[in-house]
Image (tube, rainbow, N blue to C red; front, side, top):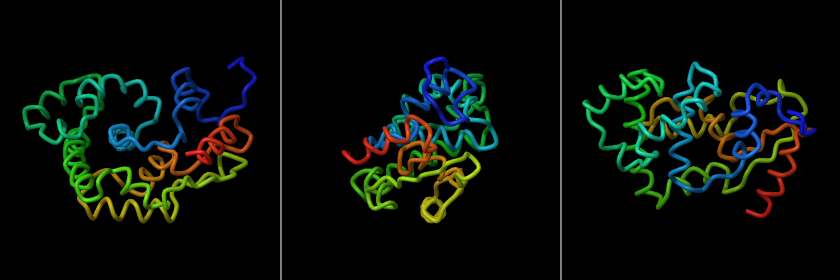
Length: 196
């Protein structure tokens, strides 16, 4: 984008994607509200592209109480009916219902583990996995860790948490560093996780 920085190819289609790539993707997230937000957004993305979800992110924040799981867990059938009329979000009844169910399950995990972060990061022993992919086609869409995470979340009643969605989630929240080695963010994320 004229700044001379080499980026992962998926991020080059819009300013929104570039900003997300440069500032968020792969940065380790330990804050529960942010973890809830990205869990919901990754589920909403199923069958769509990430740019669509990024374009709707502000509307999602407004529609789902700034991703407060306590608030979302109490949404009613009336709330669902209202959300289905909201053009700012993906108006898929299954995905909207899943958001409410996932908020309820999220709170159960918080209660059991003290935080959702403690539960989630246990799947990588609290560490960010540092990959060294040279080409986009080398990056997997699922791993053993995402398989185990997906199985656990499904057992707990979470929805839209298949292994591919879980792996995209792990990438987003920095449980794995999947920036390509020639991307300027790869070494920055590696340094960041080393000091976290």
